[in-house]
Length: 316
Image (cartoon, rainbow, N blue to C red; front, side):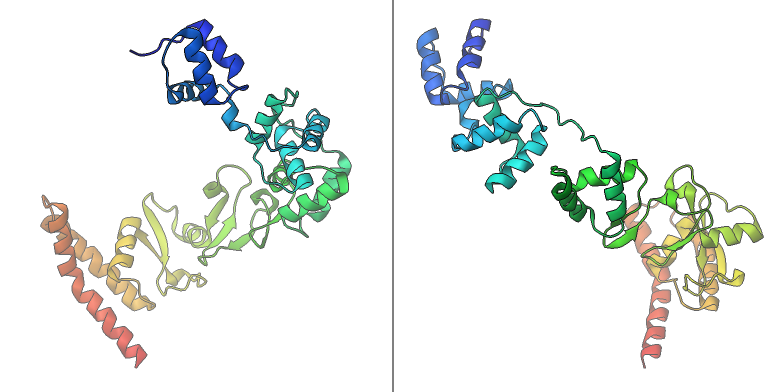
């Protein structure tokens, strides 16, 4: 029969869970209430109801460590206190374990880590070092200078809050609002973007350069279409090198080998695909996925082989 935990039994567990090991606690509980609960049953109940019990508390802390925690528990939050403790005693304990020790020794502590109040001097120090060091190094320098215990994430949060440009991912990184409107940037995929606004989402602030050039000369790009480079060169923004295609079609160009480095071949492949796409709509109507894929492979096999011959010719 399942054990019913009355308020009296629950109070007994809460009062004694931190004093005795679970095995001893189970024996005391069974004797007091004349039941026969196992150690696992007691442990599961304590865990489900978030009752701290002695097994979790590590009893290897010296009196010097306890005195250190008592001294600084009211000055720092539990997270900062853990960092200082590990640095002082060259240990690697977690914040949760420090909290359990504080509870076990009945030491009052700041339950929520209160944010550090940054003085103007601190802000100036962070600003002066933001473009010279990484956030981890800034945190180390900051802690030495102001005798604090901030982390790299704390420094990064200050940089964002005060709109301070900083180094990130081994490159000089600035938030998007620091760039003036009209600024051009090139990403790792060699795509060129131009900033057109300071408001909105990222794709509303930054637009691909080829899209701006196309819209300036041919009007707005319809939804579901994109502008591609006919010669494959993403830095060639001449109007005769740009072509408006459906996004779905362009994905299939890449998949089936239509992306050439030659304008004429690319235009020819576009015409071929548009012609064959009309045939596909008729041929694949009512087909399942496997039958449709087999049809696609037959139609585009010739083009893949033609491209392979072209590569072999160029290699020779």
